[in-house]
Each structure stands twice: as C-alpha cells, then as structure tokens.
Length: 83
Image 1 (cartoon, rainbow, N blue to C red):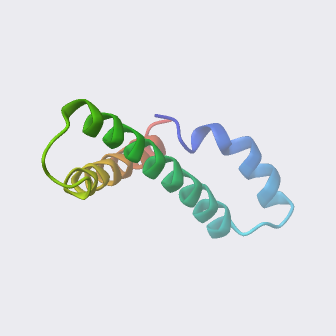
Image 2: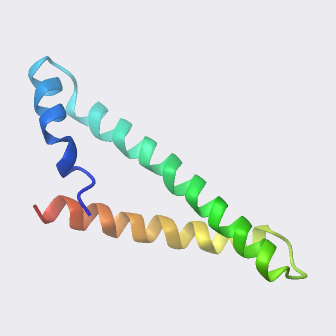
C-alpha cells in the first residue's frame, strides 16, 4: 500500500527545485483517479459480460465506482500513515 512512499525521492528532488507541494499531490491524486476509474470499468465490464444481467450497465458501474473510490481513499490514508 505504498502509494506515496515510493515517490518520496522524486518529491524531495522536485520540491527542492521549487515545485508546489499541493500541485505534486494533486497531480499524483488525479493520475491515480484515472487508474481507479479504468480498472473499475474494466472489472465491471468483465463482470457484466460473465453475468449477463437484464439490467443496464450503469446499475453495476455506479456502485462499483463508489466502492472503488471509498477503498482507494482508505488505501491512501493507510499509505500515508504507514511507512
């Protein structure tokens, strides 16, 4: 769960050169959000194909996205607290 710990040397180098700390954090967060959305849609699509339900695709993707965002938030928290 070391989301931010692996970027520490890069963060130290960039912050020493004058990059904004919130900008670095937000860029890392936005790129991770894209990863979470793509992985969730891929998982939901495979689940939808295997199960072949009679309901719409959005009935599955919305709860899966909400679950993925909640669990990634907890993952960020644990990654920040645990070294």
